[in-house]
Amino acid sequence: GYLSSSQVISLVHYIVQAGETSDAEAFVRELAQRVPQHGDALMTIAQQLEQKGIEKGIQLGEQRGIEKGRSEGEREATLKIARTMLQNGIDRNTVMKMTGLTEDDLAQIRH
Image (cartoon, rainbow, N blue to C red; front, side):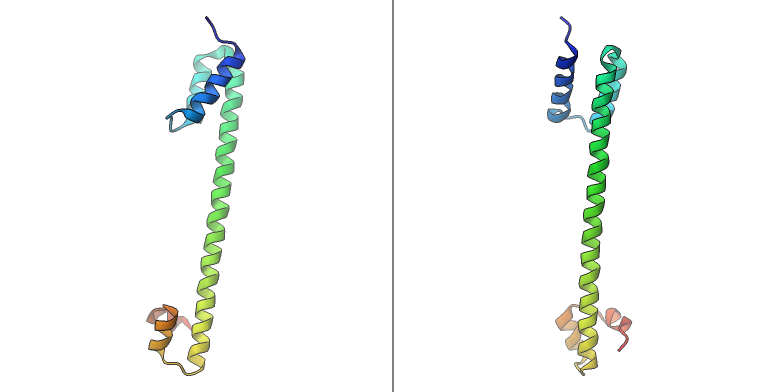
């Protein structure tokens, strides 16, 4: 016995999902070179894996962007609160204690 194309594809999908290979795409591409009669089907799997990797990278980038934006927004709000506190005569030490800002942070505030 030889395996049919559908059996090879099923086997490769299983190996990729359950296996320990760190680079599934490279594994499938190498397999396609070594088993040319199933090359087209294997290359399709490799392309699907590549697309999943691209999509995962985009998703991760979007998530990091959201987190960075949220963090910057929180910092802006804290600086605005500190500015208002200083404008209302609250001493710098109290402002630092209440906001968690440093002396350097307060130095950036124009009031």
